[in-house]
Amino acid sequence: MKTYRIACIPGDGIGKEVIPAGQEVLQALAAAGAGFGFAFTSFGWGGDWYRAHGQMMPDDGLEALRGMDAILFGSAGDPQIPDHVTLWGLRLKICQGFDQYANVRPTRILPGIDAPLKRCTPRDLDWVIVRENSEGEYAGVGGRAHQGHPIEVATDVSMMTRAGVERIMRFAFRLAQSRPRKLLTVVTKSNAQRHAMVMWDQIAAEVAREFPDVRWDKELVDACTARMVNRPASLDTLVATNLHADILSDLAAALAGSLGIAPTGNIDPERRYPSMFEPIHGSAFDIMGQGLANPIGTFWSCVMLLEHLGEHEAAARLMQAIESVTADPALHTGDLGGKARTADVTSAVCHRLKNR
Ligand code: ATP
Image (cartoon, rainbow, N blue to C red; front, top):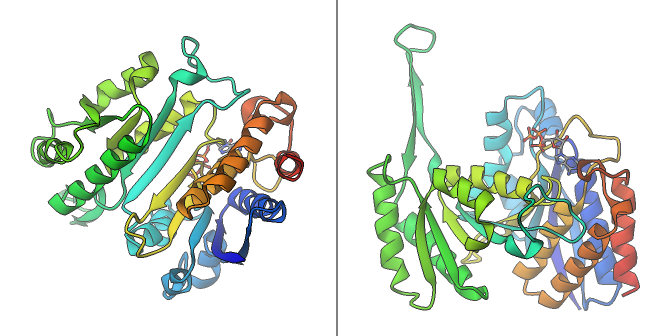
């Protein structure tokens, strides 16, 4: 029987609660006759590691992850450590080290979830946002000079390469092609950013010729926020730069009901390295250690992990169990207006997997 090697990095805050919950659900799936098993290895990297060792993960951390089939990640963020240290020292180190250049974020309104868009039915909101995850505004190109002097200067340069844009466009068109509506919206800002974003648009048009069966349109990022709220059904797959997609996908998560539900995958489409799956929420220190975190975002991330491993039937089974749990308001955590605890939601999903 196949055993998948999964690296678990709970990280900080509620990551330490939702990742063990995710492991429990994956074990329950395996025990319920999925036809494969899991071997989990946990890594205690993050804020506590930083306090003990002065870095978020060890220098040879990527080597320890390299042979894994996939990575399940919680969150990185600590009130005592600057955000740019926690982000660049762990999550981005893995994303960039393993060239996980496609960040994929599905959004749907799950059964039983009260979403803020009153004029929309759950069927109207079914999106996948593809975020360029390796360059652009978060390339890390820039610097500071004359620090502390009146002439101090700081730059963050958005860097886009033809190779980087071509590969994310190709990935997005392919993903759109695999979905029933075959519809892609290319998010841009080429009216104001007249160099890199103009190249982004040009390359989108070039790659589009390889996918004649995919309908596509172009939308300015500011207009896109309004379109997500006013005409959600006009969107299906979206592709956007690192910064634009970062913002749009938080909006998408909120429109679908809660940050606690949304999943994401940092994918290396060429499969040279392990891909990494994580809930989109952060460490949420206000509720940590109390058993109140919603684990659904992690469970849905596990669905994406299973799909990436090619275990489509098991992925569908887990998604069904998740949807049947969200449909019951008695199993809603505080972020959804309910009183359920992380453990209640976890055991309900495990129970449904066992008794399907
Ligand atoms: P970070 O600084 O690590 O990015 P954060 O602490 O700012 O994260 P977010 O995760 O962005 O917090 O979430 C904002 C708030 O939403 C949290 O403070 C928490 O109250 C709530 N929240 C987020 N995720 C969850 C969850 N899984 N379950 C319940 N509440 C959540």
